[in-house]
Image (tube, rainbow over all chains, first blue to last red; front, side, top):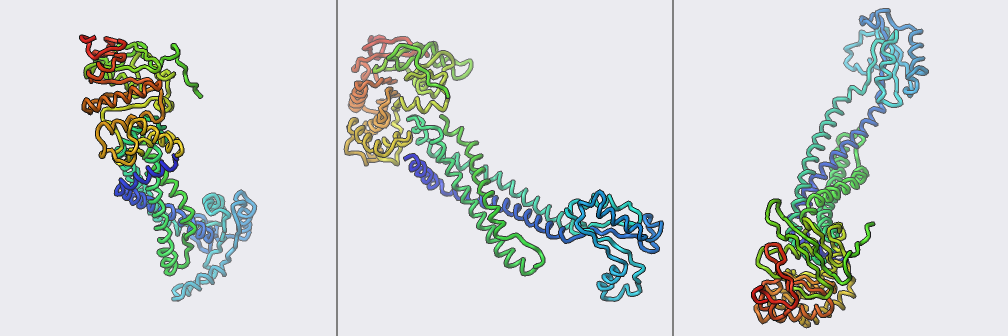
Length: 303
Length: 243
């Protein structure tokens, strides 16, 4: 009987305040779409980082002939020096951080270089002018600095370069984009809370006669407040469902159908990622409604 | 879990105000000032006095809508000063309340208005379907179950309000000017109904300005003036000068 009563009251409330309920649905929808987008951008960033960082290497450039840098003042790298650098990478303090080490000789470096020089601009170069390189793959790419510190000062090492630096600007841009989206999401969430608060308050005011009678005849406070809470929760959940559907279609048609066709060398977020984000959006929606109800109802339906 | 307090007073007391004062705004004149009243189970009591004498405050204290500034209030075996707010609904299930303005839900039928009081305290449908017609029969509204409040006369609307207040058979019925909006003839009918309810053993406490009714009924009269009890008289009449 109580359940029937509660759901009847929820339905009546939504019907009576249909325009306000619709605005709650819309503002929750927009704000949660922003929240979901921010989350998906973060997932995308994580995927890109995993993907790209997994491919990039730390390159330890060894001293070439006639190097003018201070580190190579003693002349080109010797075999003994190369062995000791290799020893540090294989068995030294950073040995655990290194997944594999590949030694790129002068000749290999030269061949690679020439292969990329299709215009023949550097055709006068010889292999002797190239410098040998240790290509190091790290078990955890984030540990670059530790490996760099351990090798940078070793005799025979000219410079240590992390290829991640190439991507850092791109990642910084995407991080900034996430921040902007998250900022907008927060503003929209605040708007959603205020709007749900107003809706719940209007609903409580419009049914003050009922709630007064309920108080008078000894209805519990929870039964008086529950229909209003559920009204807010139903509207917010509807907004969250709309947001999930929009994100799903966005990923399906914008990312999978369009972006993937034009830029195919990147691993993109998919429908599965949207479904992973969806429960959180629902939790946020219900949380929003709960916070808004808590702020409002104590005052308007007191015992 | 706190245990419901049993009245530290003689059995049979339904309402007791023990040296109760109520001040709404600090520095203002008290709405009630050192009031001592005991109302027995099954009593019919008129609470009389001019506007601002403290009648409404008295009723609000009994309903635990207000708390006393000092003194103790006991109702239906409960010490209201110590009653936690989550226990207040249980107290109110033992008090039926009737008001001058009826307070019916305009979009619900007579049956639904009375049933509402049972629905919201979790009674099942079978109980509602048996109790509501019985109550409508008692208040003389059998056959008018499907009417909406605006299709009823003032007297009939007040009968619906009484049915709603009494459908759960509370031991106490509080009436705040129940005949205030009714003509004298209709008021007599309402008073007969309240009297009938009182005879079932229900304690009736009625605040009123209606001197004719008080004079006719010859019940106990408690008169308030400036927040003080100035008269507490069995088989009393409305004004002091007529006592």
